[in-house]
Image (cartoon, rainbow over all chains, first blue to last red; front, side):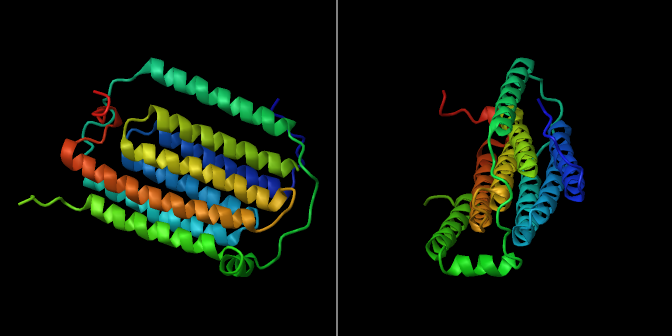
Length: 174
Length: 102
């Protein structure tokens, strides 16, 4: 069921190495007991995904991935870990029933997805993307996608002001 | 075609690992990070389709940029809510945040 009739080209070998790195990082993140180790392991996964984006010809997205996920979100989570205490970690009682049910559900979803992917008919090779994707993305963002771009900037502003307002220490009402 | 199926399979695997983490982990920070992993798997799908899809174009990459922006906003607000809850409850265990259920 898992065979995809793959030719062993250079691209596939690079894809395989990066995919193994990504999956190993994600699985290790679920198995570590310390929260900081989990976070760093997921950062490894995010770096591997940036490599996959480079492999797909999306250099700009890969760069944003490294900046945003590895640079911003992981560091934000580490700050979150530092601001909260985690002394009781690793000693929590296990819940075998719930974890087994979750594992069964996730594996079923995965099998359904793999079955759907194997059954789907994808088109053959189509026209290649332009060489200078960063320039083209910039042009698209400021012409065709200008309104979504501005909306996203408004969303970011609102979200960050809201985050500051939420995390600020509440003063005593007098 | 084969490469597209491989990318989609990898994204499905990462999505399911993230889903398992969201369901089973109790630490709220790890739950947030698992959600980020799921969003990243979707990004991988979008970028893969922007190269190998029916009509290869840059729209997939731009869409993944928007997804990353929303993910960043979500992470910031999530950590802010977590810090606020921790200040009141002195815990980050998601099982203890059940005041609405009582």
